[in-house]
Image 1 (cartoon, protein in one colour):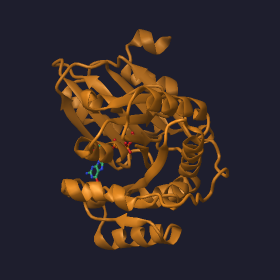
Image 2 (image 1 turned 90 degrees about the vertical axis):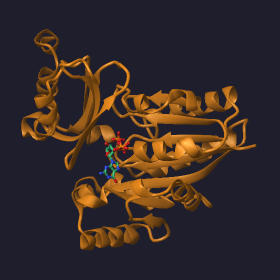
Image 3 (image 1 turned 45 degrees about the vertical axis):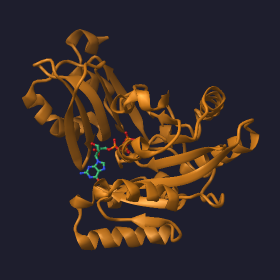
Amino acid sequence: MSTKLHIVSGFLGAGKTTFIRKVIPFMKGKIALIENEYSDVSIDSELFIKEELVIKEIFSGCICCSLIKDFRTTIDELTSNYDLEHIFIEPSGVGCLSDIVAVCEDISKTSVKTIEIQSVVTLVDASSFEDYIDSFGEFYINQIENAKAIIITHIEDVNESALEKITDEIKAVNNSAVIFSEDYLSYPTQKTLDILKTAYNHELNVAGSGKTIPATSYFTTVSIHNPNKLSMEELSNLSNIFRNRELGTVLRAKGVIQLADSSFVHFDFTPNYFDWEYLNTSKDTKISVIGKDLNQAYIKGLFSDVLEALI
Ligand SMILES: Nc1nc2c(ncn2[C@@H]2O[C@H](COP(=O)(O)OP(=O)(O)OP(=O)(O)O)[C@@H](O)[C@H]2O)c(=O)[nH]1
């Protein structure tokens, strides 16, 4: 039996984790997930039911460049230690998809176990498409042009004609990928699983490989461990705080925080989106912020005790 790799790519906050959470519970066989976080804190793994799958996290960079070695080792360890049917790979939002596909292809040739890239999916957030394709064209286009299936997400934030325009622009970059432009969150299970089948990687034909600039020259990251407890009012105001230009340009923030009433909350922020949900169990609290020209001291000071902020 070969181990099938599923690469689920997409820019910051596009919906990669959401999609993976939607498909994994319905797939058969032993499954592993490799989560690549650009920052140095683990947030997304808290959202998975750990008994269902093996989770490996790779932090502080991208598996397509600075962390290639860790990525290879992780795949080798996973395939040696478990009898896996599937490995899901969630690259960091600023990862270069062509490089990831090429590395996976290379690993599959040299691995002692039989591994094949089964599907390559990219999620594209409609609400930020026009801004991001202008600002981050290189990363952004690379993720689109190398996908076999593309899911347009956050479609409720754009009107029909804007959605059509985005679909046309995506087709202009990649006219062979199957594009899903309905609300994928409302898809029945089988249709969601079928996306993986349409994303079948029948040939390695990477575009833009090796031309990308390292993400570190564009994006910075700030992590806060054990942030202060927030009141409900402060939580409600969090999206305005992240939009404050004194912080720099915050493109993504996510975290697990504790409220004043001691409950735990997971939150997600992108420039066009903010949401949070209660968590059932207590967790380590932490916040990860990714953006451009971030004011690290200012951001840390906002969420840390005065003493910690001064260190
Ligand atoms: N309304 C709406 N929310 C969505 C959609 N897709 C994802 N979300 C929400 O958007 C937030 C970010 O989604 P994630 O799945 O964490 O995005 P990601 O691509 O994994 O983000 P990174 O952590 O930056 O890699 C979460 O709160 C999701 O619930 C969508 O199509 N519509």
